[in-house]
Length: 324
Image (cartoon, rainbow, N blue to C red; front, side, top):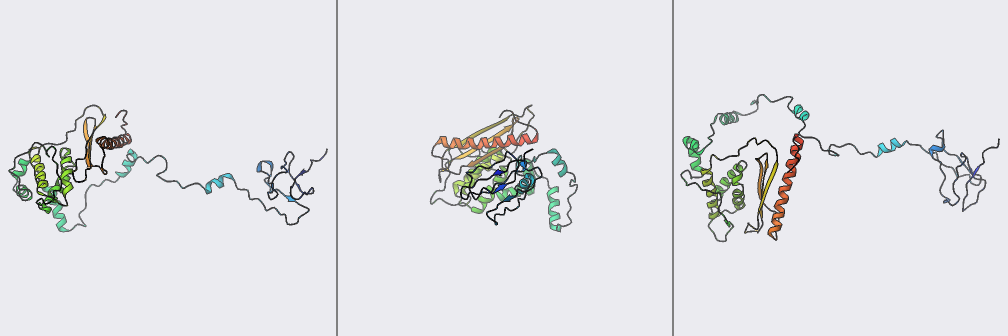
């Protein structure tokens, strides 16, 4: 039986017929390779995973270093990014299991050990105070009547039908008489807080809040009109009814160039879930719209953003929306 022939390695720079590489049969390296490249066999041709030995008779310094065989799994682990909670699918913030873990130790009683005596007395007075629900109830209480008279002085005013006049045209006029700045800011601040539960005054409060830095007489008159409107609608609130569906509906509108000081438009929208009002907003746009169509497109974008957020929220709560 004849032995396997020795595979010859050709070199274009120095022809060395004596240079041989011990390798299995049917493995050869072309003769047109670069002289500086050293042939290395793959792992699949070496059954015992031993390094390849290269012998040369012409040069004693041609020593091939040993090849360190790393597994592919170790190489991948070196470059694998650490896991993060923000990668991939976001966490379910309204998962029932998560909520059960949060409420495993409910707070049964609030401790007042670290509070001062004055703070304890103040918190006790808040829980024991009877907050009136209507203007008639407030007028029947001497303390509430005195506070209302001191703050606004409009207990005997005539109610208004709308919170703000149509085409009001409020702006800062040069040379106009100034109003009391501190009183104006206090009243408008209370109206901003009230607008969180009264969407019917959201636009009017947004308009009068633009002049907090320099209130004038016409601005104070607009604030007093809001108070007159609130007196006539003291029993008005948001009503939630069971309509048998959870359809999502949104309405949007825009006031093009309504602000006469900087000519910016105002966007407004409100959304209904199951026929009940859930969110609303009235805010001045950040840039000047060059046309009414541009102002309308901006308010539509705001409304669509709100719809997408509500749809995602309801899906996490377990009520996916099919139509909106």
